[in-house]
Image (cartoon, rainbow over all chains, first blue to last red; front, side, top):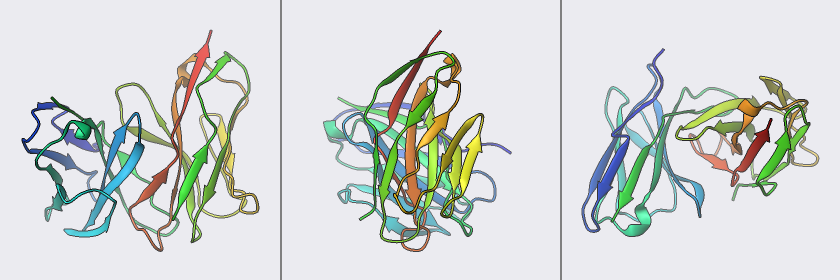
Length: 114
Length: 114
């Protein structure tokens, strides 16, 4: 089975711009979660989508948004980029079942804001 | 809210040494516990998991036991190899209240020297 894929792998943007990141989950996985990873804050949860609905949201400003399509692919958007948004953005998919959410991560998108 | 505390790193060991990385957690529900590993330039990979008290997760020589009485999930390996050099994350997921959201520790960087 193909793993979680994320595109693009690297992005360089300027402050004030917006960016869209894409994530394709493992086939059959309906839950997609997004995380921001930075050296200072570690791994922080952004949001989770399940069956095209946002089911959970972390403590990020409204500039961070996402959506999920009927094929479970997900996108996240960051508007009005700030320098502090530079990070590795990780997408994870899972097949929810009893016993906890074992997540499968993509390689990440490295976003640099200048 | 939920939280995970890992021992501070970095950890440097010689090949064949014994490894312990401590992890304790705070959770309002009854979480599942995970260890993930991240190699340079990659996303996180699930290393092992445990879903209920006294469960032992194991994989590739690594082990961790879910200790509810001490709220701990320490990672151990009897003999580390150079190829085990990576960043290790302890995480929890409470499927009852925060579906699709994992809470991570800060990560522990392990370097194994030949």
